Image 1 (cartoon, one colour):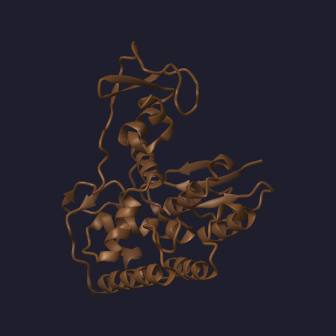
Image 2 (cartoon, rainbow, N blue to C red):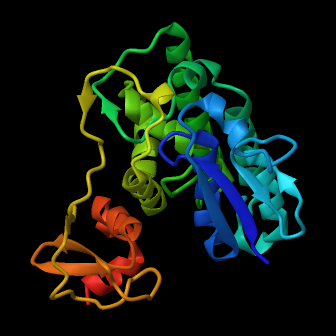
Length: 294
């Protein structure tokens, strides 16, 4: 039996983003069925998930035995203990300790950023100057991210060596800093850029954009700017499927019924969601790139 993960809208629900990132990077997707809930407002969450008792929060992971875990760190620790071969925490004891410390600080702190500046992967705003409490938290992020990299000697873009739960937990924060265009220190800017170019996060954003659901509580009336990471190519939906490169969907393997134009060729998909998520970021999807580059 599989795990059942229930998440909120990928473009807005920070802890849901973290849960998806840890599962993606641990290569556990084949063991997880994901259900996405699209509440119009944050207050609508609990009435939409009465079966996810007792917490009724997003994300919730239902284990094969039926036990439900309603907290992102609980989900992280349980999956790490069940799948030690996936190296969800660093193997080195010092790096593992630092990663756990940072993940839990994110989980319990940064109230100014988390309360007034919601995650929103739909938009980026022109550089904003946060109030004093936000600036203090930006300085704190620069300090602890720099400390982690120096202490662990990380030679990757990530905090403690290879991508770990700590990085998944900070992925939503990286998008939040992008959304509002805050001025960042050098370590923070490099770390945020690593998240934005991460194929797993790109796939999550593309899937969220394809769904198109908007949470008005998370929208802010600021001057917009282009999302910092723009895919090199973006597809276009088309009705013409007469000469598709492929006859079966690259994701499901079933016959194609929906079509996308990219460059000089037309590609087919089994449904509109498969097509649309590919349109927003073709290069983020290995299954599609396998037929595109063939």
